Image 1: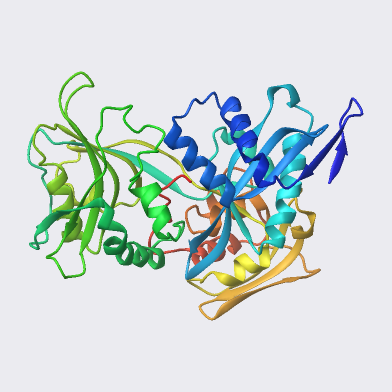
Image 2: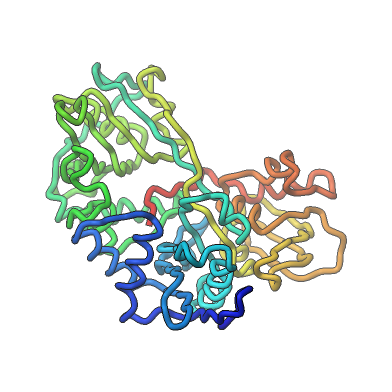
Length: 419
């Protein structure tokens, strides 16, 4: 694909060959004002080489980059291939020429060819991506526990033993427990061993903040005796009191099969010597910890914000792949300016037995943009919130309530990783 800008200069949009990956990384680091260490650069190079890549070439020189990790995302009742957008950057000399829009157009085509009905991202500037059809689909809470005193909980902790394990052995032991969460919560990614090692555990020390925040290497605690399936686990790092501030525990990930199992893990984390705070950077908005806490002054939500932004690329594939909590039959008038093939009037007929999405000339019950559909798709945001905000329209009384009931999930979607 080739376009001409206002100055008549031809810009070509095409795949980035592996030989240009180092140049693409340099462009990205320049755009985001980053100076990564050698380990981090090696990790990024590995990630980019495995990614779906699109570049903007001006006179043969790379002027823009967009990459996407080939991931599989949990959705209500199943999983779908998803392109996780990353490395998006344009040289400052080439801004406001429509380069990002043209790269995204090429990206959509490549996602279709790669069989990916969903795209997602974690925006550095959230105002940008709504116009490309992305909507905030999951939210995370930041939680802080005052651990200067024993953690007061309303449920007795699971009595099984807690034990520390070698992080290098963690992927094989923890993977089954993590995989079980995919069926419970939408918005989560499947993991292979390399994602475990480089992401959740950062075993190569290539994380962007590795060694820069005073916290040590990842530690892993599991609930349950050796040889038994763990009832839960936590991945965390610690910082002792000193020049970086008071002692603290920073929790990267915690999974538990039940409330008592979660109580055992949180109690342990809040009892680590020489620390006075447990910091949790990302937890689901319906985390049971918020109800387990006997004293909400001790367990405080310090922030809540959007996490994963989702874009439905193939509407029929997305809607027919997910499960539905209640029957619904209505006509949707869908707007999609970036992918006009998705736009129009469609009859959605869905229920516990499956769903269909077919063109129709019937009058619409609901009108909305693909951005709002992406926000609702995983069950995280009821459509009525967008109606109240004037961003979607209900033409038939009760239609939005029926659709919300069909989209509802028992657990809110949650995305705990950002790559």
